[in-house]
Length: 91
Image (tube, rainbow, N blue to C red; front, side, top):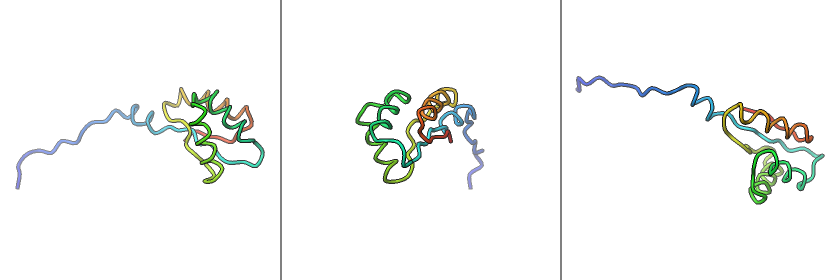
């Protein structure tokens, strides 16, 4: 049996919280694929191919995490998606 003391690593909780935030985009029956792709490019900085892949995931799976980062970065991006008529939230 070892007499060494085991030390748990310390984590910066602010950094862990920032990593955990993500925008989740949900499927709807209203918006076209083109509109969703255009909004992901504009609001989230996706490439057109990345935005198209996310829109297909949303369509077939019902939702997709489209952006992760700090809450302060995600909030205006999510607001832009909502203002464009998409259904999204920050988790």
